[in-house]
Image (tube, rainbow, N blue to C red; front, side, top):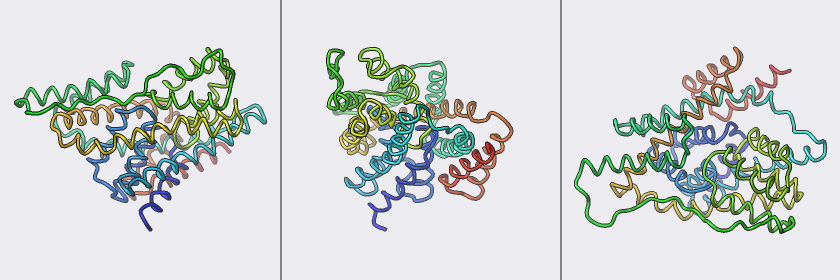
Length: 374
């Protein structure tokens, strides 16, 4: 199969089965593309993962775009991102239609009951493999421990990443004489500007698109940060949504596979129908393609610079620490009784002993959850 066809098929499948949030998405990509298909070495995968934390937008979607570019060039960049986003967008659109038509959300509790435990096994395996590659020195291990503690205490994720990268760079400079030449400084890409839509402007499709374009251009952090960002404008300032509608929109983004940012699809449909859903989705994801296209060629150059490479190593270590904290939180939410513990253990055994594809594990977990509920 040509590379572009392989990219489309792989990311369509990942987009349909990647439940569990960004940590789970990243783990499934590592399992499928590093361990099984060997598209790239684990070290390069870690560098791309670290680079996604230095730009705004959804990390796992940006990682998918990076991986598509690495495999099939510029066409791969577009195809990977689109194929990863579209399944979640269509499922979210269907959920929004049902919500408007019947006034309630589709019931997905039984589905997630079985999916979350097996996802936990996939994420733990990825953390173990990536940790063996990224945490190879005592300073990196120390940075990872510090980042995990800071994250558990509620410190801002972007601050943790910045301090972790700076700490390893400072340690490197303390051990060696300063290199000659200019110093390469890493800074997150961000597009800052005035709010495009204001309270005095009535709802319009153009305004909806520009609002989500702004969100995708400046937002760092998790889905909870997205919730706060959307609430400030859509609920409090403009009154386009009610509080309950916004919470339902974020819930749909959480229980559908693929990017959590498809919350925008749900909101777009509520306020602007199918055209609104399409424009909101385009607006929030478009910056991710632009930022990856701009930053992707810089990643190999960063690795060649000792100082920038040390910063990237620090960001990689902190990224794994953040994933570990999210995994701990996922475990507390997923392992609620004997059945879920058994599903997690069975998933780990199938993954480690028989190397079952993580996508099949997710589908099996979903079937088990539905069966147990029935």
